[in-house]
Image (cartoon, rainbow, N blue to C red; front, top):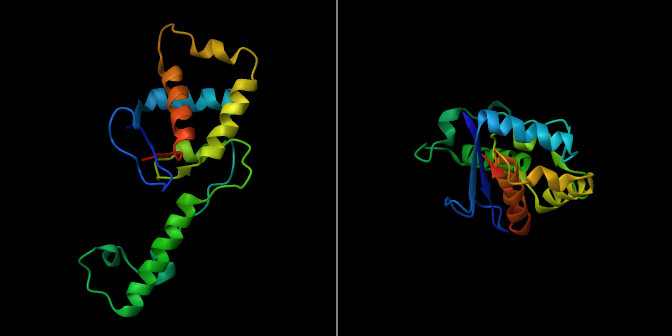
Length: 161
């Protein structure tokens, strides 16, 4: 168990799987990073939006298979379900305060937007002596995380899977 973070391009798709595009944190490292983000005010507690249920669309898990033989109505229901599901994963505030904590806590593929990352980094850099957190002593997890966030902000954001 751990956290897999992926940089996405402007199209919100994962940019790649190489070392410059991904960051893996163990469960302990991830928990530490998320706690540290909260300390610096980089995350904000928001209610996690609810994903749609298949039942709401009259579907079952079998209907999501690429090989499922679907009726026209089931195809429409499947398309509507997929659009609603992606809508939840892509949701973002117009003027974010910081990164909603659930987006980095949960491995659900939420899109962390460049503006959410920028707001988080602004809060971090406004904190007194923030740069001491990145000094080259001991564990470099935090410094790697901040560097990763800066790259993600300049790209199209990031996803946690």
